[in-house]
Image (cartoon, one colour):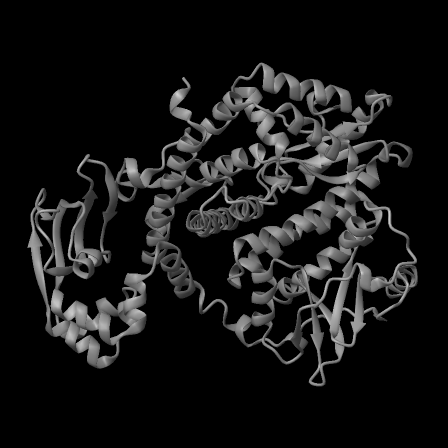
Length: 605
């Protein structure tokens, strides 16, 4: 292989592409090609490394002393920086397929570490930073248009501004005139904000008078960005602070608009607002069907732009909720709508079903109201959703099934049965129901049902242990097998997504957390010190990667008119994607151990 070939090979391997020309020359001059036959132990605790290895062809397994596989390495993979940097090798690196590799001398490798900070950071970073680093490299080109857009390039909402000291009722009246749910309070020290949720918590629930000054409940300061700031920076601030809206000011610091998270996402999918508008304006089923079908274009566009999968799911979840709500209003008579609550459950309830894979929905009917009169309308809802492209649930978890369409009292009886007479079906039903989210009708019915459920779970440690044990149901292949060579396809839901969802769901149920999305549950659990910060951060990264790879695979299947499932073709993965998948699986395995220890699942049969 020529020097030019060597340089070309290395430049495609992260992080060698960050080396300067002089550093690349140093690398190549101190690098040789080596061959190792199958079953050779290259490194071990008794045989420390003198080189950094980059695989040209072959396979190497990293094994523990207990003969457990930690990682498998293939073409373009590299190892073992840790033994060079820290002077010790903890595991065994064994050749499983005849190996041809580059060997970079230790001294040269350490010199590169000292000379190039980017190169150094990659190898010294913790796993979370490494994953973020790899993802940044993967999606940088896709995000280029995102990076150069300015705040005033997108849609902003006119601000409803009131002066400090204004009576709350007067401010509310002005917000109605502006047709907005956000009130901006102008104070001599800056701006504050009042939202609908704040009114509910600080006024309605506390029984306060509407004549109080707005300053009494407004949150100060309102975070703002300049109209000329990069849209990416505004978006980063929204995500960092976990807020949905931010103020926009001009160069004189005057409030000129309100920017919402959904506005930024929609900037990169112009037809998003068209879809939203079509849903709102739909006067019949035909109109609503057309709007619903167009959701897939929104998903495809956002994914192509490199928008993170959790932001896509958030946007699609909001639009799906509007579809359900509109459908409910078009089918169910007005006098029946207010006496029931339509809910979505499972992945839909968690806002984590992006591509339409199945339906998980139910209806809660107020006690004293005849459930039978709802049944024909629920059957029509199920049939209509199928026509909209929402496949029927294989487990029949749909409002057309009488089991998922019953009175409030019947549901309370059911949750009691789930807990007192648990079996696999009951565990599954409880898990699905716990993820429920109200989309139409009287939402208080669902709130009260969950209150009742939480009360029943008090001191139910054995039940919770069995519930959490489902986290361990499926194997995670990076540990139990060489997933890159033994099988073409992996069910990424079973191998990675489900263990995270179920483990976090178990912790959230025990902690009585009402939030349904896995990402937000993780953050709440970290805040409550239930999850260590490092594990929480790792889970957030791994979950994002696993969901992103699944979405990519599903969109390809859609394009090829193939059946949508959770399988990914590992042989279609690029080098960076393969590294991301492997590291994500490592995090999932560690999380399974955490769940097993936390719930003492080894103590139950």
